[in-house]
Amino acid sequence: MKKIIILIVSAVFLMSFADPDANVILDKVDKNMSSKNRVFESEMIIHGRRTSRTITSISYSAGNKQSFTEYLSPPREQGTKMLKLENQLWIYSPSTDRIIQISGHMLRQSVMGSDLSYEDMMDDRKLTEIYSATITGNETIDSRNTFVLELIAKVDDAAYHSQKIWVDAERYVPLKQEMFAKSGQLLKRTTLTDVKQVQGRWFPMNMVYKDVLKEGSGTEFRMTSVKFDQEIPDYIFTKAALKQ
Amino acid sequence: MLAFKLAFKNLMGAGLRTWLNVSVLSFAFIIIIFYNGLIDGWNRQSRIDIQAWETGEGQFWHPEYDRYDPYTIKDSHSPMSEEIQSEIAKKNLVPELLAQATAFPQGRLQGVILRGIDPDQTLLKLPTATLTKSYDDTDYAIIGKRMAESAKIGIGDRLLIRWRDKNGTFDAREIEIASVFKCDVPTVDKGQIYLRLEVLQKMMGMGNEATLLVTGKEFVNKDLNGWEFKDQGFLLADMDKIIQTKKAGGTIIEGLLLIIALIAIFDTQVLSIFRRQKEIGTYIALGMTRSQVVGIFTVEGGAHSILAALLGAVYGIPLFMLINKVGISMGYAQGVNTDLPIGEAIYPYYSLQLIIITIILVFISTTIVSYLPARKISKMKPTDALKGKLQ
Image (tube, rainbow over all chains, first blue to last red; front, side, top):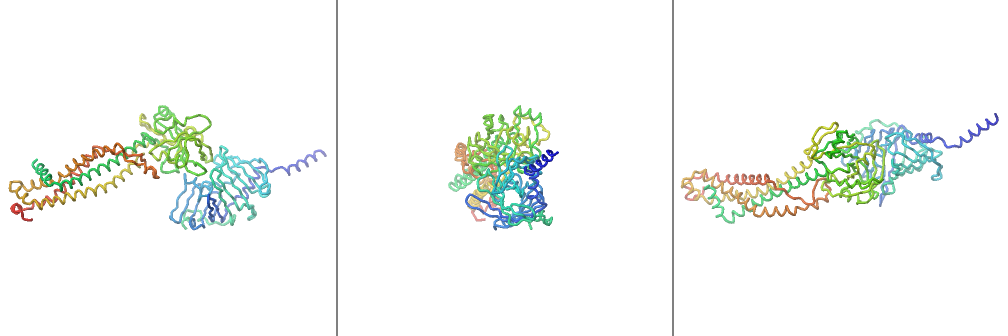
């Protein structure tokens, strides 16, 4: 009897130090990163060969099906609006006063010269909906302990067949993400920093996207303010809002 | 006959004035024939090139496919039936599978269309045989000169491409350029990468599927279930519209030239009738009716066009023969960013129909402008005309 109690206590003790389940980690990441809706103001710093330029915008998004972005500066981009509904994307340009639908080849073009393509902006489902995760190790990034997860798509229509993701072991926020093609070719790398607590959740306020197939230093995405679960009027997610 | 004899005698008698009119009219003749010949030659060459490189004798399209709408490429593919397979085996059909992708030449991003094509095909002029260079792990591709120049790549170079398969999942791999072809049809070349059909089918997860089927001369036209036939009229409609526009534009220049020549003839006729009133009176006094005299003057004016045609032939035929030998260089136009099929040189094509229509057009218009002033003769009083009184 004494031996059994020792065994049970030892097992419980060991389990408390063991890595948690990878899919549980991923679920916690989703809880931090996804929300019913959010409103955020951001700066997108595009590093070119010679110079860098900063584009500021305000975005409204509801779930992963609807999003609306209005560019606030520089003057050249001011007033440009972008609307995503389901898998369709429209852009309004004030200089031409026209709404155009982005499709086909154009979806593969970069957004305002950044490392993000329009189709990158189209796919923002929860990670747990798309991937099965396994823990492949532990690493330290900027003195933060991380779980290294390997994600393999469990659905047919995942944009990236696999991903490698470094998740902060305490805050459950990804600090680094690598996206791979089916062939195993590394396609994109995202580095997430400046993790802050916003409305009870941890959220990275600074992200650097790098299309590794493309030359350049990548695109920095800084959140200047972010609010979750806000009251967003329905008309925001309509084509009529683009011209307003 | 008398009218013709008199007309030519008077024209020759007028000397330099006649030859000046005839020269201007012959120039209009030459320009009309040359310009239309140039457009017809371009049209002929382009049609031959488009058929040889792209359209064949017509194409069967997947019902969803629209060449002007890139939205449609993603869903425009379906399996090829046994009937289609047997026509492919007989070399009567060439299947092509289309997919959108992004190429990364020297770290730059470039949107491209991947075209999977049977490497054993001989129906189109594309040098697809080089795609069968080897069946090792390397995926060979062929590209056109324009694509090679825009991506700054050549034979033996490797190019990284990224695409999304039928489910939308990204994939990427390197391909090696097996050959670079030179083609005068930009739509076959610009932004197009040709791969082995089976390779692209595998890449996309679309085994035995195609987007369109190019037909050959031996193909007996019939309905293929699930595919829509597009004939030459449809496939070359863009070219026809361009030709029509160019011809319409040319008509303005030709019309202006012709009007200048016709005004000169009209002017000559007015002057002739004014200065030759005694002659007109004499004709009537000799028993000619007024309409016969009007006829003499009209024929005289109209005869300018006959002389112009002869003079035009004297210097025009050798000139046209020379141009047809060397061609009109269009090298500069090839560098222009256009989707128009333009060869290095255009060789004008002068059809018999073009020449006859031009001769008739010039003859009729010259006769009309000659007749208009000659009508005044019918109102002349013969006695006053004989006296040379101004009327």
